[in-house]
Length: 308
Image (cartoon, one colour):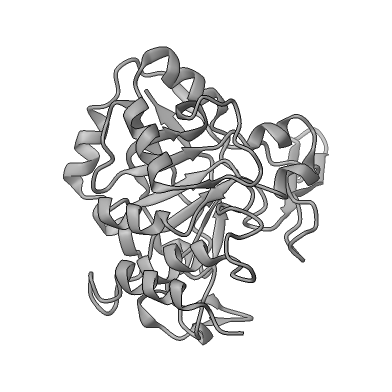
């Protein structure tokens, strides 16, 4: 089944292949310049730090909908073990097995492909069983520190949480921008709050994933026009699920990651941040969201922190 004409038309309008050279592997992260970071640091007023990651635990957000994407399985391999003989210092060590996109995470540009290509026109076959992503792996995204802007769509629309079938539109983003009192600009990392994470926090793992509000097919053009560096939200699927166009699954993923080369994140807990921004009336902050540099990985856990 081929992708619909509407998808290809949007893809042409947001395509960034070659914009930063034929060998580029980080896409819109190129927009986070030294000047952008300096201005982001100037956004810090109180020094209040707000963590945005979910706990990594065995009963996490994954319900089995995506095969192989397991919640973190934690095990101890040493418990008070005196490695160097009786009476010496004892050690505790642990291991974990998990899907790299299991909880709060970034998707690498190679997380999806379409029409046989990944970002910058590279063949989809550059992702291999043993080496992972030979090009555009998450390890290439070495510095994700910039100005963060919370677009609290739910609050801007007068709701605590968007309905499961709500497709977030550019008009919704602009309403949230008006609420924030700041304009999204080049190099920003945009955090879109729908309130959907509340469903998971209340203990309904199945209801959290389906149906879900999320970004619509119209949003990639908005982010492209603003030269946004990366986008994350508080849902399992990032985009509206089920999709707006029948059988066009992960269409927003393909536009953001493959065509635009824009990092995207899911399962970010934006509830405390929403409260903090509402209390202070400030929706822009310094955001540190460094990916774990798994070589060749197509995604990675992240523990982002907003500094107000």
